[in-house]
Length: 118
Length: 118
DNA sequence: ACCCATACTTACTTTTTTATTAGTGTGGTG
DNA sequence: CACCACACTAATAAAAAAGTAAGTATGGGT
Image (cartoon, rainbow over all chains, first blue to last red; front, side, top):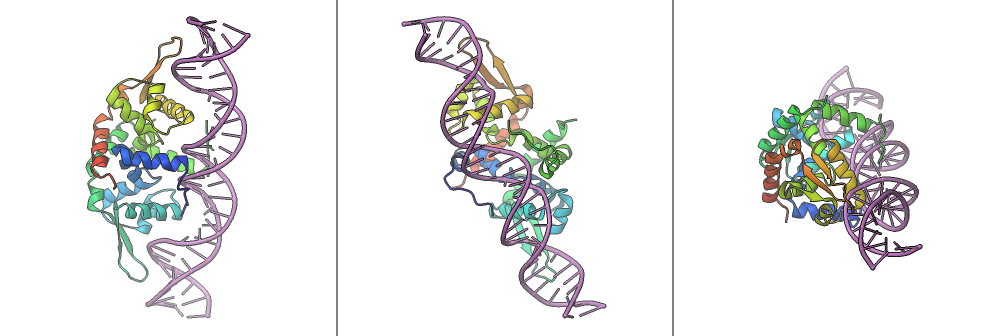
């Protein structure tokens, strides 16, 4: 994956704030490039397969979809369900932890919708 | 400033989602590198001067502080109050628009605090 | 004339993220 | 045996974000 320098100023700052500020921590979980978009679809559609997500996430690349999903899974936000079939079938859904953000995300969605540009 | 390419895939995707998804739009306003940290301090302390913000935002550079403030002001989240004195005195505060996010931010803070790592 | 305070800018480099394109594995089908 | 489906991975290049260090502006004080 993208390998970060462990001790760059940027990384150090990021870690410091994640550990000292609830807001920073929250954003670190949902702030990734396509993460809220993924989460939004999973909020509305419960379970989605990799290719179903790809269809919905207009413009996303394989690499981004895979990496964002992996991070969400690592952070405990999303569950990966592998049906171990052939051809492969894998579904993604929000974990209980992920769902605990539902209220907040709904409010963010409403607020954003109400203030869309244009 | 960092000059972006108008027609890179990345920029195109970003614009598309900002315009079509409330969540993306909300995040575009508060998701910048130091924005929530700035906003968090302004929520608690009402008005802060440039140097006061700098003290509190451990690790931030001049460049980042100035650029994040400028974006927040451009987006209508923050007010810049210039007292036109010498030596210069400038204060920053949340606009009404910025304050309309207060509830949501409080919840994000609480949620993040409750789920801090370590 | 020189220095101070305050709020920034600017130029240049490094780091980080994202795009692009091609490839992997595997069992079943024609 | 070639090909398909599906969920990815890998390598490389391009783009964007952030760091670093020095500079700007200006009135007043010494």
